[in-house]
Length: 369
Ligand SMILES: Cc1ncc(COP(=O)(O)O)c(C=O)c1O
Image (cartoon, rainbow, N blue to C red; front, side, top):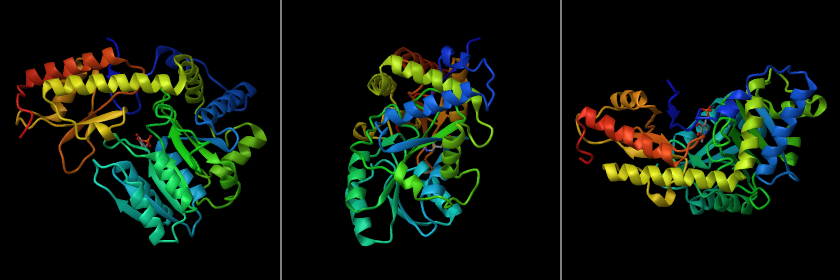
């Protein structure tokens, strides 16, 4: 039986070539592995046009580890962070800052509303103690896209620092750090780069990083220390996820062959449009308006029919070869379908056919209340 296609925001479906890149064992001290790490980091910085200003620091672990490391390393102990909040990953940043004991100001938005730069402007105007803004680019909890460029302009105009969680947007949506003033951009191997999970990375402004030696609360999370050690030795400080790095190198090669960011965005946008129109034909409604929807993951309202049950839909769709994703909203019953990974529009059409068949088997007829 073939593996199911993952319609999730990572781990996601990878190519056979990427999986095969993990069939070799690498010594962490070996110069060939050090060269692999260096080439991956170089390409990641280039991808956002930041070779002249920023450096890439890789970190073992899932994406959250890198978010925590970036905040813990870059925000001074007496810093104060504004978090514009329109979803679950914004709330995770708030939680992390709580653990780190950093002062936080939360600016709440509805979960179906993009962050408004004008309100960030007012919040910064009202509180001169705020040193940093921490912003999620694509809020994967719903799939909403926040206006990064406008937010960066406002933060810069107030002379504050910007830290971006670009976990689910990096490599797919355009980000150009030559024109966008950002101190740190955080992402991971197993999202739109289509590598496997296990490694995050932070693209940090060199001058910002140089200024924070000794600031981090944690040895393992200290990006400054990781950066200094890597510069000196070419090695990771602690056991690196060797196979993950090798898979990411291979995934980056395929990314460049495909045509880089514009080509990846075009494929995901086609996946998204195909999915949304086919699901709407079945009777589903999207949680977000099309104007704020990123082509990464789509939240659908659950059918109102009493015969609907997500666990049952999941099981039946899985039997047909596709893995769905539960909703992350507390007030509305939803589920999510990712459109990223090594998949195309044909996979999206087959996935919707599987959802249609599963709903028929379950006797789900009614979509609206
Ligand atoms: C925007 C965003 N931030 C952070 C994370 C956390 O990543 P992880 O689950 O890999 O720790 C994710 C994961 O999907 C994400 O989408």
